[in-house]
Image (tube, rainbow, N blue to C red; front, side, top):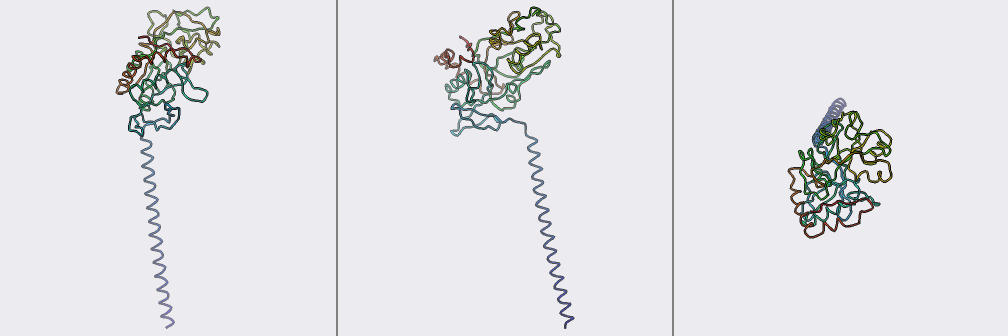
Length: 331
């Protein structure tokens, strides 16, 4: 009997151990399967993320001055169901666009944008972004459309003049600024520079501006050495940097529109050398992709504010006079 009980007890114990092992094995299999599913989902999400085009994180400033975040897609709809049109502006273009003491985008182009959009009941938002995301250029290379405008981070870019190269890529609105020529600028006490022969000279240019080395090259019937070798092409990010390079002798001359040099001329840091050179096909305008409906709406609004006198009032206003002058078209 004791033997039977012992055998029975052994059998029961073995059975219990076997069931526990099966449960543990099943639990282990479930956990392994769960981890496998999580890993597969993570892999798929990573692959999708890598496959998406790179966008940008931008600050959107509405008419009231409040800021919100945009995920990079230009086509958005507001809470009232209207399409939101996003327009890129910079911050370093005299009275046209600058940053005020509170950090907000201000300037004539901002005022103009609000007036035009209001005239045709468009919900427009400004996006502060670097200029090269609208139009980019590399020393000695062909200029190209900026990633922001090409990829639809926004619908249009303010304050861009049509040029031969740009019209191959983008479309332009009616011009709202006069056509401004470019010139060579040298150090104030320079007496040696010859603007009709720049062979072997190092010339400075403002990156992404219309007054680029391609414009100089188109003057080859008037300027010897107009085809500047890449090693002698120097691109800078802004007027201040170009002026500094001229003054320090790091470039023989700079090529720019006069609006970027007025202060330096007044301070007798630089002076103009040679005559005016037209690099643009028209004055400042709005630049957009060729497939965009934005420009048709913009031009309609612009015609309205010209007809009702609002445009002229904006041009005559002294609101931004501390930052520079406004050269509006007259017709």
